[in-house]
Image 1 (cartoon, helix red, strand yellow):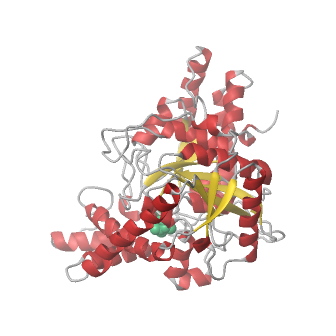
Image 2 (cartoon, helix red, strand yellow):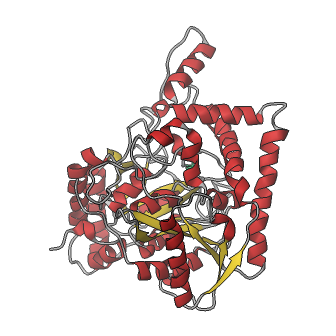
Image 3 (tube, protein in one colour):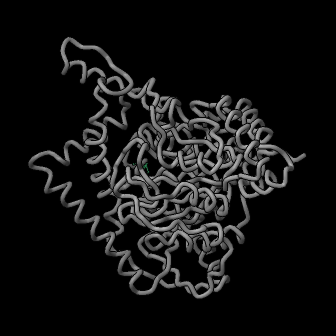
Length: 493
Ligand code: GLN
């Protein structure tokens, strides 16, 4: 029998229905794979094998009765940012140590209602702040990919590094992730997996630890485009508990996979050709253009003139919202408490000890840009820039562009503890240069693996869509996938 963990969600789903194996067997295969690999890769911070096997047993009962849900018996990993009832949820921060929510996030509740099985909680950057998964209080995740002939450990990207690594290394059939500035798409690109950030409002944010509420969105990371489509359909819903979730029917995204893209007009924004971009990425982009053209799409050069302001504006808006959202971690309501001689000292000590360096940096930036005297110059200005960025997209879409094609990241995976990145936080922030615009404008974006570097590391292309037109992204993404093939790391762990 082939290794069950090598099956995609779609393959496993069909074989479970055909009774080729049971949900318990499939789940056990993942539980064993996690046991064998996690010490090396550090993708899971809290595996939940007992829960997984109990859920799989219930799936087997439903499969036997012919009552299978769309994800019946499919083992998934859950980013530690999602509240899971009775299961430790820490956003990989010391300050949430010991926090066990008494409630389930809406997105994970949707997945369980559709029959999915929870394998455990996945590593991530602390409070989802980062692009390398190195700010986690549980330490870095190792990318399952290595450069050809090298044993240097690389980052899987971030903040959903555990999600991406688990999917790439076959430690989960699929995983939930979140994206505030690129945290689904960047790690997907760096691990040869597919990640989609849906339109703002498509998934409920309820029960997901808040980072920057006007930018945060849930989304899946899968092995291929079809798996991402299958997962998103189950994750998406309107929710009275999140007033920014949108009441629109959830389409059958899987039906869009493989649909013809003939006649679609694809914009190629010249502003995404940034200084110092490696020739390999430019070549990959040109290759992507050629593939879409071959599939019958029309390629149009477009301009999004405010792109260059997106990253600086994001690094004002996101920290501003974070500084407000993180005010609730005060040693009283959740997790860690470090006693002091009075209330103020208790707050100060708890926050000083509980938050890591990057999170503290964001809180300080956020507090500064919101403070009296600086608010107009920074926060208000950034909000105006945000409107201009959104308008750039509206203009090209009004001109009949159906989607945009860009690189997903400015480089392939880099080393753990990279000196360059560690010495200057702005260098780390530059990893998000192609992804933050999409969050600022609230649009959907998908990252699809498109090729390998000369050193053998995966690279991704990004497709950006019209609001709530994830279907077009799945159709275009499957054209790229079909042409590029799928990429799997050579197993060393
Ligand atoms: N890397 C970006 C940041 O650190 C985006 C993170 C995310 O999307 N959660 O803010």
